[in-house]
Length: 496
Image 1 (cartoon, rainbow, N blue to C red):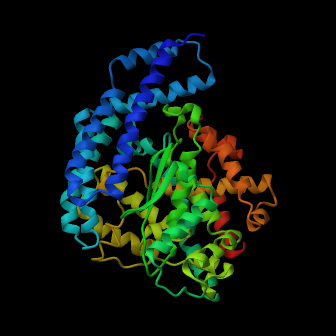
Image 2: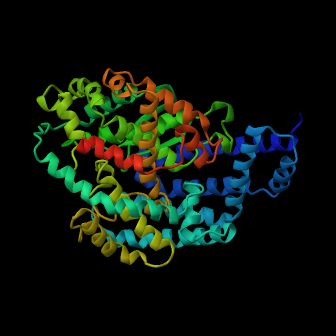
């Protein structure tokens, strides 16, 4: 059956994908390789490309093509593809090109300055750039809200987690707030009786890089379709055909770079295994950032902190960092599951991690809704850090409100995805264990294929074929159920 309008739309989206490919690699290079004096030119180039992509996504002819395609005899997959094209078209048309370009430029400038301002604890300098980023994010939120009828923060969150609303996040996080502090206390009391040997460093960066690459190979990363580099903040970028991971290194502690690399490998394998027959179309993209984080946390937390996985990592750590008793599998697992209240989110264990996310969510939501201003952030941060984790961050901006790249890059509405992702990941593994009662024994025996095969079949290969609640229902037999996350933490850390 002829579908000329739908076919035309596919060709246009594939062109957008190819240009976005170049934008993504240029953005990765800006963070990983570019010399500092190149930033202004690169920022202008990325803003120009962002403007061009916006033009292509908002061409007037698209409205007619979408309407005509709606009347064509499309199959179920094509209907889902058209649904995603409409979503892209609507959100793109809600924003003027001038705002898209201004956001790109302000975000690039703020992020670049942050790289030197954070180590210098220079909140005042960071604030100058951040005000403009927030002003533009608020304008984006206002326009998206007017178009969609959503609240401002919901309109931004919908860009990352389609269909999710702050009311649902409040419900889920409100429950988490009730039991998490007590669980942290219980686990720390239990772990006081454990003997944990600390590794003796230092640990050269080159050796850590080689260890990370071996861990990536263990977890199935395709080095013919991606690479590992270094940046100020770990991330996964690029495109499905060429996935770029970064991590960061500390020579006094190898675990942050190792766990960060494992985390980013989860993102990367999702991207590398998206359905190639839908490549270049919105339906071929990852469904949401919550589902993306469910993959990175399936790798870093569900697998990475599994005692059976420590047996696989132990010989790799010894191979690259030298033999020492602290690298024995049981001690390595205790190191990787140590629950400690710390300042840094990306280094946090899986029990305290949600507290970091709740803190950021509560601040950024108030910021976007206009209830607070940028100047109010440090005091709120200090208050919530003390309330949630009992830590004093007064004056410690670099390990407090300046530690993440997200706010300087204009990524508002993203933070809830981390803990939603942890909840999805727990639900995936609960589902796997029901289907494969011997899963833990197989992981301990070095057989990771059941995990990867399940994720590929139920998440990676699905792209955006289904809206999130249906994808989760199809994969696990129910929509998001936070009870699995609580049960996972209690089982792993309290033996309950």
